[in-house]
Every structure is written in C-alpha cells, then in structure tokens.
Image (cartoon, rainbow, N blue to C red):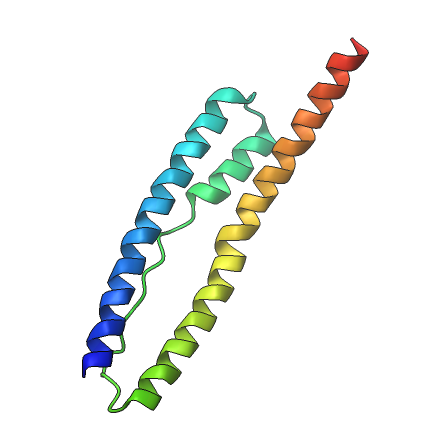
Length: 114
C-alpha cells in the first residue's frame, strides 16, 4: 500500500511539473509570434503547438494487489507517455524550431549579401 501511495504522489508531482512546462512553452510561443513575421507556415506551426493538451497521468482504476502488478502498470504507462510525448509534443516543436532556424539562416544570408 505504501508503494501505491508513493507512485500516486509522484504522478501528481509530474502532472504539476507538466503544467508549469506547458505554461513556459506557451510564453515562448507568444514571444515567437511577436518577434517573427507572421506567415501562413508560421501560423500553422504555432497552431499545432497550441493544439497540444496537457498530459495527465492516470492512476490505476483498481489498485494493483502487489508490487509486481504496480511495477508492470508503471512501466506500461511510462512507455505510453514516452510515445505520446514524442509524437504529440516533440514533433510539432521540432518542426517549429526547424522553420525558425531556416528563417534566421535566410535573413542572415540576406544581411551578408546586402
């Protein structure tokens, strides 16, 4: 029972941390919106990030009866979380960063040429 409570508390702490990181991400997106010319491509990339939802970690509906079941549940959830983060969070952010990097490189070349 002590392990179950521990992992539920850790899940709550992780949810709190995710909320704070999401808030920081949207502050950065706001700065990008102010600092870069608004194009259709940039708008699309930003909107993909705005569509990201806060991840929530669910505790098991029925608490496992033993530590082995609890560990198995934890491992499954961590695997699911990793896949979800990679697909739904990291890819849209990487796409935006690639766009911004290309824009900055283009502007830098134009400055050198001009």
